Amino acid sequence: MGSDDADATTPEDPSLRLLTRIADFVEPLTRFDRGHLALETSQHRTIELAARQIFRVGLDFVRAEGQGPLPDGVMEVANGAALAVEAEAQLASARAIIPGRLALWAADHGESPLRRPGVAACFTPPAVLGFVEACAACRGRGSIECKTCSAAGAVECPTCAGRGSRPCSACKETGKERCGRCLGQGYEIIHREETVWDAATNTGRTQNVPERRTCGGCGGSGNVACARCGGVGRESCSRCAGQRTITCQTCKGAGALGCEACASTGKRHFTSQLACTIRETFECSPRTSDAELAATLKSLPAIEQVLGYAQAHRTTAETDASTFRRETLAAIPVTSIVVAVGSRRANVHGFGPQQDIRDYANIAGILLSDDLDALESALPETTLAPPRTTPRMDAALASALASEANVAIAENPGPKGLAVVLNDLRGLLTEEHVRRTSVAMAKAIRRAYWAAMVRGPLALLALALLQFPVELMLRKLDPSARFSAMLGVMLLAFGGAIGAHMLVTRTLERTLAPGRTLHLSRVLSRQGHLRNWLLGAGVFVVLATPAVAGLANLLIPA
Image 1 (cartoon, helix red, strand yellow):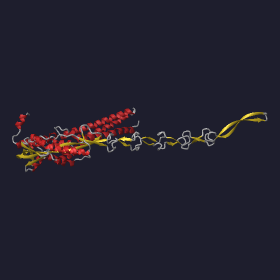
Image 2: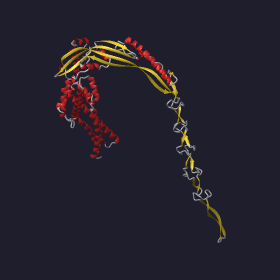
Image 3: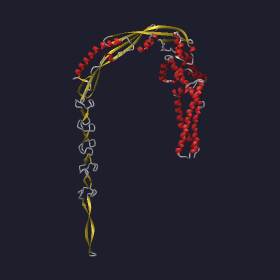
């Protein structure tokens, strides 16, 4: 439809035009057409609203400190006292300049409600001030003594405890070892040749005569000085080479560490910069005795919303030393109508020439209250364990799902979803109604889903039983082939679980939305039923398939 056609069908009466806007928003979100909304009374008025904008200019110092000399572009002063004097001079100069510049800006832009003074309009940043002093942590040296080695650069050798030597491992600190000449006996046997005369034959013969003598190597003690330690019982420490200390690993032998406070420069710098901020405050004062309208208009957050509603406005402005004030008097047309929804009434307001509706006064809640009551009264007749529903609950759930507002609630469970729905519907439903609907529909959809599952699709998990004949046929194959076959059965059974969910979804769509398009799969997914079903089915398949294989081998041994 073109814009000319739309204008031709728009009612001239502001009350009827507002009712049409309400119906255009409500009708697609409920199963009820606009014929259920009737205009009972109406009122069109213009409310004067005073919108006040206050801009306060503030000055403050941004102070910083850092390592080393001053950064480039900083004006150096002697010390902290000199910095304080120069900073106060900058502050006094800025305070003297701001009123004139703020007044000059106000003269040009003060009566334009959408213009806001920027910092550049009333303030020019002065030079950054700073001074340098010796680092207090290192006293200007750029380094601090190493605490590990007490600035010595070396620490006591932990291997020898600072002795430079350690017990000889060869002699166990005795300084002696067994004599290798006599093998620790203290003596040695010497064979001496001796001629013996044989009177019978009147000849001499030579024989060996053993003789025991004191060992010349150990002097009869059986021990000699340890060759490793030279008889002292200790040997030089291999780690410190007898020096008793090793290089300190913390400072690498330097005895000092670079000062982190000043990055080893021995200096720290301190800066001060005068900065300007402009803080805006906004408030609305509607001149009306209607408390509901006053509260709505007072809650407008900015001048843009006020001007969007205003049919006409005029603005005045004034300044003082550091504050710019602007007051805009806006004439806002408001159309108020009482909409009859059956026996109940809703008071709705349209603001501005475009009749913006900020709160739909629970019109959809009034229309959908009977559906919610029917669903809540049918739920006690159903059970989750075992899953069971009734035709009455199915009909009540079907009626509830026929309204897009209820579908949106079902698709957005939990506190975050509740906040999303309430924000999108702009008062079309109360928070209490949304909470009740969310709880009732979640319970009804859960029971309908599992009741439909146990009526047949659940049996598809029995595909895991195929492992029984597969195990018997493949038992002579190697384990890897049997495992591959088992994995195939698992995938087939899990595919059956996916198919079961699809069958249940189609069944529920035919039951709950005959002849209508309802994306129930999205609702089931958002509420976690798809995740829970596939997780449970997956665990069952993984456990059941090997169990069936084991049962086959137990009942029919090879």
